[in-house]
Length: 126
Image (cartoon, rainbow, N blue to C red; front, side):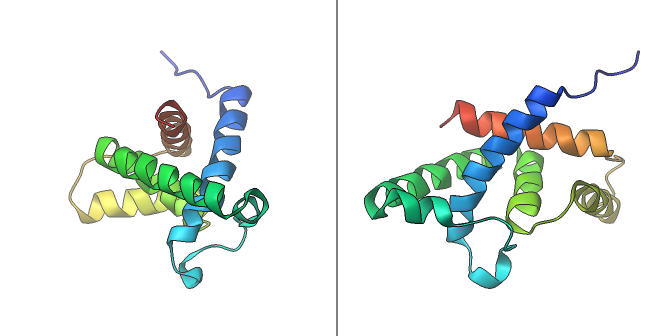
């Protein structure tokens, strides 16, 4: 039985949440660690007190995601903070699995599924 591809609406929604989360989550890391494509405009536009509350909320959600689903956290981190492409993330997941002796091969579809599930988790625990 062939698996269903991810729907365009699920990917679109995941990307929207990825942009929202990534822009403020990036503020928690030193500037040299962040891919410049994730803008910091949201915090500047919203003002200091709201931005601080938003950062605290994102921090809590990401910590919860890391405890609950480390792979989804890793995918979000590599894509939103490091700026890796889906193919680069897939390759890194496979390299790590091989290095750790884990008999698992990730596909691009797996990586996208982890991205969608990670952003869905963040949305649900927002």
